[in-house]
Length: 135
Image (cartoon, rainbow, N blue to C red; front, side, top):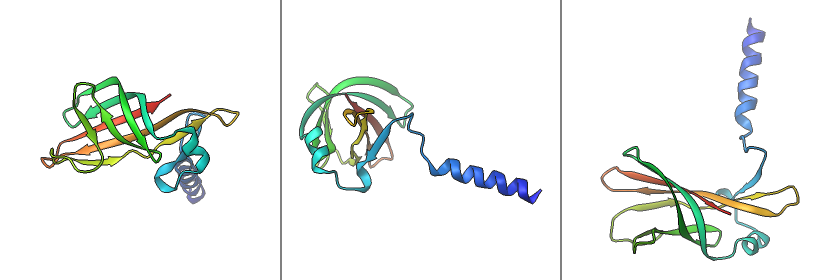
């Protein structure tokens, strides 16, 4: 019986050790500095992105919006109506977290997409999450 329990514990540990990436290799920019090659592949600028939005209210929507990339991070989301959320000082009182890009490469090593998550936390406890995909 101890061997069976040990075997299940070992299997559970191994399955948690390797993230499921759907067959794609990605580099997580949160824990490292991007290489010069990666910065060339996704240079600073504005990009059209597919954004999946969710919030503490349960709302979930998908949009195509413009995002600003700086130093391999999404630093602003432009809502197209004069509104935006961005890293740095704001007069709305929110905290902007996340934004470090992960790149996805095909079998030839070419970047075909980049993704990140941006979280907006408000002083009243509300939050918004933006899952961003640039292709």
